[in-house]
Image 1 (tube, rainbow, N blue to C red):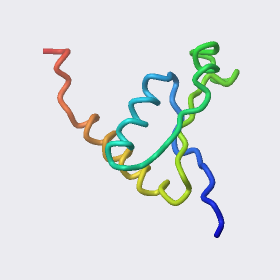
Image 2 (tube, rainbow, N blue to C red):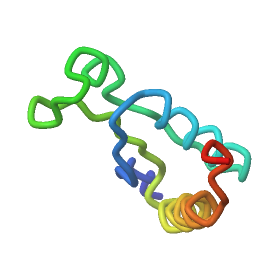
Image 3 (cartoon, helix red, strand yellow):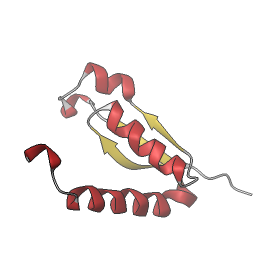
Image 4 (tube, rainbow, N blue to C red):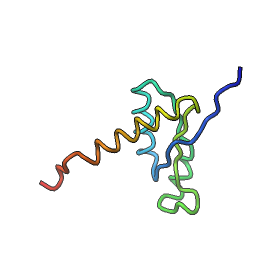
Length: 85
């Protein structure tokens, strides 16, 4: 039996965003890891220097994880902006 490998499913400009996405996936039973958090802290705002956090999950769960993240992105984009009221 071949073991699943980790694949990158998303990149984030800061660790907090990446960790929130990781927790959302965990709520759906999908295990994931965030890599690059130290680089994103050091090189924040400088993506050319590697200032991204990567969210990775098992290859066998990647499709479902992407669907969850995309679904959440759509619901956030569709939500009214309370800050402007």
